[in-house]
Length: 293
Image (cartoon, rainbow, N blue to C red; front, side, top):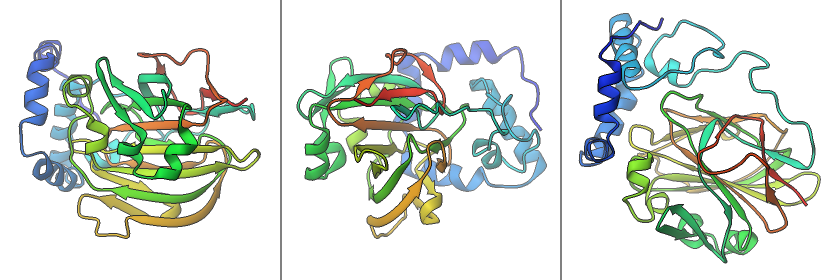
């Protein structure tokens, strides 16, 4: 059940959408404590708690529920981690296309200059700081990247960008800074500071390495990976590097964020961005993201 919203919504979005106000309200707070609390509170299966929470959520975000597989929710968590109806996200079948693993807004994209890439205008970070893996740094040096931000209202599950073998998952503990535009423009090397999971994959039909980095955010420091049957979160004690050999098909669901966050996709040199991929573009699961050589 999703309730209607008040005429106050435009005013609230305008006030709390102001970058300075938003930055202070979502970052100058006990982020870790609040993230743990919301993780617990969102899973309460009580109708009044659910309805009031969904109502409050809709005051600040435009929920995208038209493609959801169901219309009734047991809890806010149930709505956040919703599945889609069959066929809602067609997967591009072209074997030369690496598709988007998630719904998102392109924050930044383009070639990696050596091992340096752009977080936001005026702010950069390096592959070494983000991945903490010298081999992966060499694989993606002078390659390509796309940073995709999932807003709180978007579909939060992520999928395989191509038929590939997932060889390793590395979970890196860190902060829970917000990953919205106001914070990305202010906090240097934000993605390198936040909690994140690095998924190392190799394409089955060509051997190219595609790396996915799922970056957590405030209220969202939990990532469920189906192929490991594992929930990675702030209190996860290890192991922090998990070897696996899971083969997945293009578009197959890999897992989900407990709420919304960011996924960064890395490809080696020789690939190129798909034609419509540019800063500010909205892209959905299964649409072309990169083209193989």
